[in-house]
Length: 390
Image 1 (cartoon, one colour):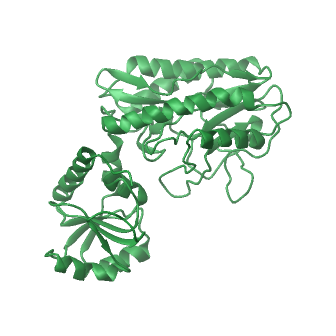
Image 2 (cartoon, helix red, strand yellow):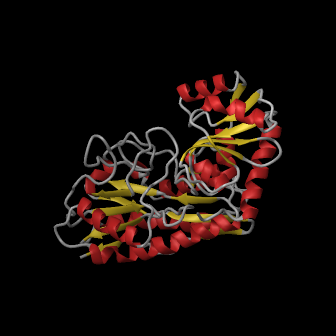
Image 3 (tube, helix red, strand yellow):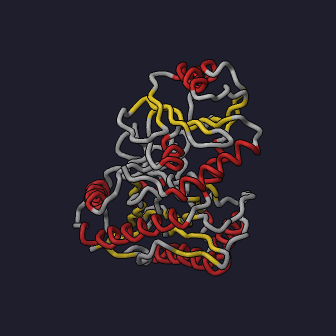
């Protein structure tokens, strides 16, 4: 088992313990895989318990072979009170939980087992804490982005005339796995299913989706209504590739767009506006900027170019142009026109001003940036032009 560096583990533990104190709680219980990994460097089925002081306690159901001296095997949450008392701990009276992760049944059972403490959600606070990355985390994102770019550079060689979007996606997925992709695409929130990323060809880019991603797509089944739908890649249309940059636990996000043969002039115009928005935001913003300012600048540039009807969709237009990235693909902050969030040093975010052109398809790019005191660092270094597939 690759252990989390001691300084990383200690720093994160300290942040959560400070939060426990600030929220006037006695303990915090973590059950989600992503936050278990953030605090421990591995995941398990069970309960990670933190107090305002001292080390973690891991109440583990599975697996049975965790080599960690803090691990205590259990079969059910009803065992926790006795095991705590054996170790000299009092039962907490106010407990922080991930209310958006635990089901009502699981939370009620846990609360009953602990003799009915008050329970308060820490979910949003944990996501905020995770949004500011350490240099260790940021370097993993840079590594992921470097591999991501290598895969995207291969895409033109994978295309052949008459292919469907799904056939090309399968070839890209194969290259992703060969380059070390973990396969899983971690997302936060209800109804946020996706498989290794999104491919949108032609008018499939107009198809609305129930998921809260920038663009939709019909998908190949009503069971997963997003992304590629089996469309043939026809000359004069575009193909937007937004496949996962999950080559390390801390991810990057990147979109590039391809033209099948020569696309109409408006596709090149709108695509260039997307590049221009990325460049303008890179030049003008740094730590301390309000996220709403980034959105409003993009919106102004879209209006100047008369592209409002196509911005971030057509029949269903997304109301954001970017989002934080990390252990999950959609972390804070979110770049919306009304956001009160501020860019802080160490935040990594994806910027994705995109356009959907009826009869042609989606165009635009997405890059991942790291926020520094003196500017933004672009880590997705890959050709941004509207590349022609022949």
